[in-house]
Structures are given as structure tokens and as C-alpha cells.
Image (cartoon, rainbow over all chains, first blue to last red; front, side):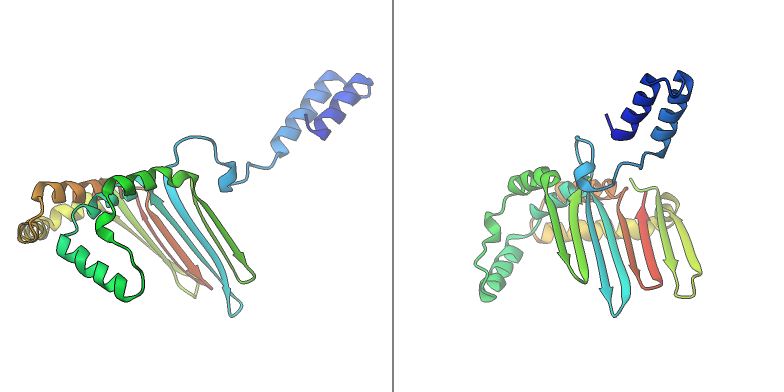
Length: 140
Length: 85
């Protein structure tokens, strides 16, 4: 029970206000309640549907904002593309990765692993704050 | 399947431009081009020894998953919004 509601009930108990007045005050209190914050940590439990990227920046005193919302279904469908990449392309990409100092073998990356990665994305939260930029990645 | 593509551009003078593109009629109008693109994709799949059915199925799944996508970029007094419904 919040403090204001308790005060109203106390006034009712002390006989300072009538039951009708108390009801009106409580109704007014509920109307004045701020809406639930839209932060990712306040989202109701359930299957996330979207991956959201939000960037707020200030460059040369000018505010900038990027807000991208991508359906997770789109990511799942995109993962299927990995299975369609020709082996020759993977070999060339691997060679370039090795040349750049990234010893990563793309042929070892299976669509099932990527699907599992997307499945667990709804637990992902990235929150980066800097004096002139704020980046937030989350699912909703 | 996407139904409507919305593009909104807000220029520095504050006047917004809004464009609504109904996807299905546009696809129907451009259907000859779409058929050619599908044929080209099928040929590419055969060249690279990929399953044509699987590739087209993946493309269709991606197209069907597009609704809900939204890009909103704003810098200073200029803003661009692209939303797919």
C-alpha cells in the first residue's frame, strides 16, 4: 500500500472524511498515477517480439536519436540465410577474417546455433552510457 | 506479408513529408520485375548449387517477417522514419 492511500484510509478511520470522499480521493489518486515506465526492465513477462536499438547522442550541441525496432521473427528468418551462403563465399570470408587477425571459422557456425542465439536474445540487455551518448539494446 | 510502408521525412524547416506505400498494389504493378528477380535468384541458386526451393522459402519468410520493422533517425531538426506494417 502506498503512503497516500494509507493517509486517506487513516483519515477515513479517524472520521475526518466520509467513505464517499475516501473513494473519490482514492480514484483521483489512481488517475494521477504515472504510467508504467517504458524501460525494458519494466516490460511484462512473456515472449519478446522485437529487438530494439536506441541511441541518443549529442554532437556539436545538436541532439541526435536513432530508434530501430526489428521483429525477432525477422532475425529468425534471416538466420536461415546462413545456410544459403555458398561454401566458396565462406572460405573467402574466412581467409579475409584470418588476414584481419580474427581467427574465426564461419563454416563452424551452424543455423541451429544461430537460432538458439536468437531464441535467447530476449534476455539480452545492453546499456551503455557516456557523457555525449547513450546506447540501449533490449527486447520488448 | 507487409501491407503498408510508411516513410516520413521531417525537413529542417519543420515541414514533414509523409508517404504511404501500399505494398500489395505496388508488387502487382511491378510483378514482371518481381518475376524476373525470382528467375535470376533461381539461376544464381543453381549456379552456386543451392536449393532453389529453400532459398525462395527463406526469402518469403523474410518478407513475411518484415511487418513491425521500424527505423527512426533524428538529427537536429531533421528526422526520417520508415515503418513497415
